[in-house]
Length: 168
Image 1 (cartoon, rainbow, N blue to C red):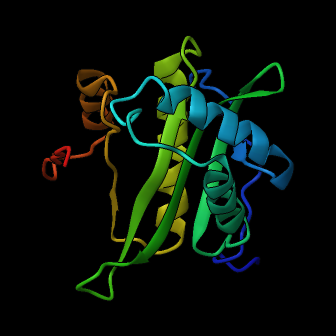
Image 2 (cartoon, rainbow, N blue to C red):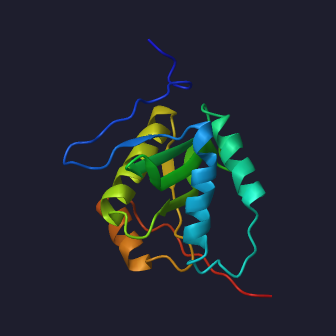
Image 3 (cartoon, rainbow, N blue to C red):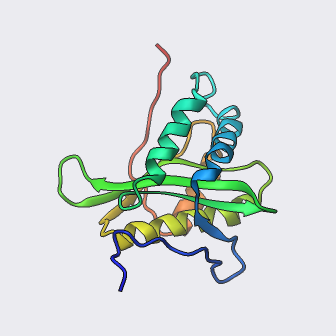
């Protein structure tokens, strides 16, 4: 039996015809950055400068740490159209493990709900296999907040706070 901490899930398609979800490969980092930039430029965070190099380096570090981090993708015609990047780590005040997201986005027009749900499901299962007690996720400023709330609640997530931002 393979050790669960190093297990690399195979691509799978869940029941109900949801999109294929697989772990991203190193060769897809550029496509991940392109997708993130596209979504970032339409987000409420677009006023913040972004560095393609910094984002690329983050994805590379996550892909180099399969025991504690993962980047899942969905594709259409071999092109990355959705991704969920996250990790599992002890909570800051506890030894209990918590899963959290770094980035979660789906390309505009890319069967949003189906891709989103498949990506979140893959990440939750991955966290569970690593012993996480909870999975905590956020919503990017400027994202479809009502849609994100519907998605997460429909998947069993409970409200866990509110975020605030102020230009200074």
